[in-house]
Length: 269
View 1 (cartoon, rainbow, N blue to C red):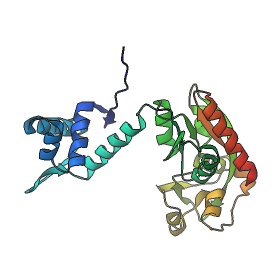
View 2 (cartoon, rainbow, N blue to C red):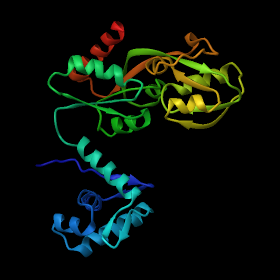
View 3 (cartoon, one colour):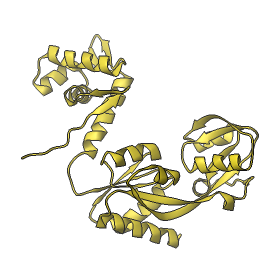
View 4 (cartoon, helix red, strand yellow):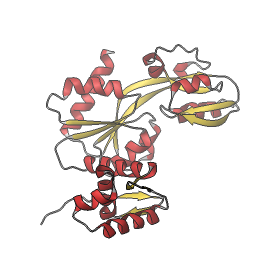
């Protein structure tokens, strides 16, 4: 009995079939619908029909037509790249897939440089929400969280403390801008606890936009240090300290070795 995983994607709540996604990916790789049909050994109308069905399911335009032929637009390229990345992550192998964010990237790189001499680990840098989805789907083995509250909201998962950090709070008034990374919920729950009035008006992934926004914000002390930025926190950072947690379902020896190395790296810093 041969058992293999099948990769698919859900777009706007609709499951796309692997066949349709494979056609889309080949159009992306070949640069045109005609060349994709040749590469797949399919008739051009079959390829066209699969793409039309895919657009209908996705409820979005994915193709653009010019005198030189039909290829993918920006949305189509985005979907093709997403499917390609999913296929790579689903390849059967011995690698331990580790998810982190830009906040924990340096810590992970240092730990893996010491630990992974045989390339047994794959590192994926994204955000907590994306990493958790892939952990739950079995596409990751361990996730290092920015926001430790996710550990208590995820059923059946094991977690261990691997490091710690603090939030810095820059108070510029009621209007706040939310940084994409870090334990932002801890910061805003603290504001609620002390009765401070605030309104979140947008968010950003770029720390420089926090500074230019002229709005209040939270940012991790480690990130500020990494960027060479000096902020005077309007709340004692000791009141905003928290633990960085590693989440995993299976207590594999490779996972344990990684956690041990992460803790050692923390102590060495």
